[in-house]
Length: 330
Image (cartoon, rainbow, N blue to C red):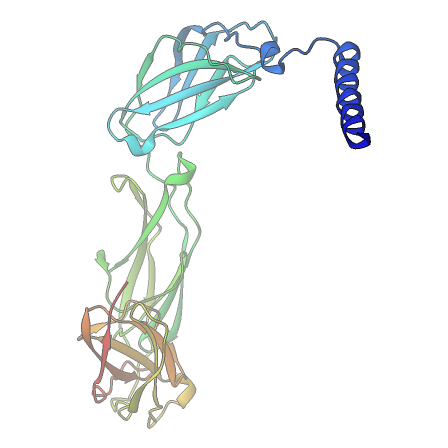
């Protein structure tokens, strides 16, 4: 009997507590019911105001919104290549925008819409179209200087060129006696290179051509004339030996080592080492006074490496015994 009365007391107490909670808590309103669901009005009268070979400027009439806080999105569409499509965010106070770093000589469309702080999106404005201009402006010409390093080498150094499109500059090419050269060029940086395997006691003229990344606009530097000193040294260095793998960095990138060569006139520190990969001279810089260097394989599977030693007069040794490595370029 006591147990039954105690159970009734618990039920009565719980019911009283629930009733009190309803009386004093007041009516509840869902927060979702108060959310802003009104989208801004659409921007209007979108027009193109300026076009260059790498930019387009647009302007529009502003949107309005009940919240008073929103921003714009400018949709930029390249009709020739979707890789160049983008979406820009513009503040509420701004009704103009300049899209930069666009592809040259390309068709574009532009549309603007507004988004308020609650994420409500307006309809798009009208579409405005533009065609970026073709780039016909060449970079500025570099200023070239030359220094004779040895009977067979000349170092060229030049100033950086600039272009009307900042991100479109520059590639450099080296001209020897009026003709473009690619062999025996040891690139030290973008604006410096050593020309190797020149003939001792010979006059040469050099110039450098700067071209933009479009490839069609180029300007040549001044021409520099030099004469390499004569040399009586006609004996090549000894053949490098013991060509071996030092380390494999994967992706066909390896360090190889060898026993250094000797020369009848030049010290070991002045002997250069050319690395040939599958019979082709590596495009990486040629270093001197070293007994190991970095190189990468060019074939899937077996790759053959050989080394030649070169002295300051341009005399080259016979190739080393080949090193065969099984590599897999990534």
